[in-house]
Length: 185
Image (cartoon, rainbow, N blue to C red; front, side, top):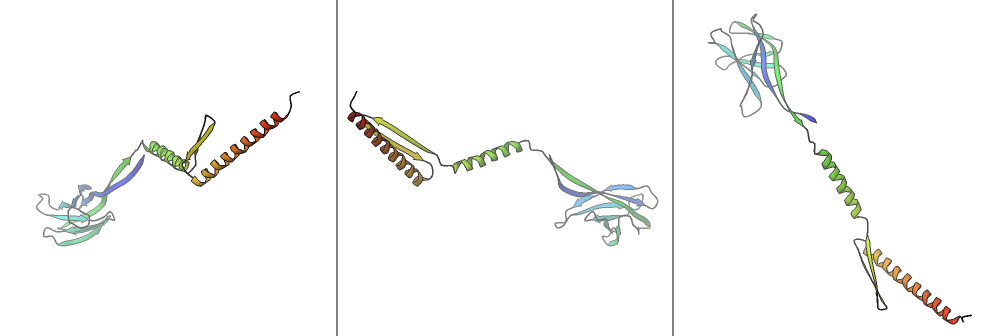
């Protein structure tokens, strides 16, 4: 089983307004056509009439704070605070998320076995093998053969076989003629 980090993102920002408990607000990816940027809106008044936009482009901890008109108000890092709309905005943490891909491939041993057999067969294809046929019919001797490689070496081997057959035929004639010359006692 193999684990891959397929993707990462900024999931949320944890903030504190004045002395409130820490709030976790989700951050959404913004379509800018360029780099990756995440943003959220933080209300600074209880009736949600005013607020600031917070943007982050990585997990390094730097956030850009924009007011309602879209003007940059402040740049703040994780663990720091800034004053906006009469409220102290403290950044406690930027929460990241990751996408994991888990890969399990039970067919890998089969693939490696097939690859091993393929390599063995490739090596075996370099080994020369030959076939020789012989037929004796009505006093005539026929010989033939074929090979997959080393044609010249095969031809030499065939000539050696024919020469040895010719030599053994001559020896057999000589032995037969000697037997016919020796009288029976």
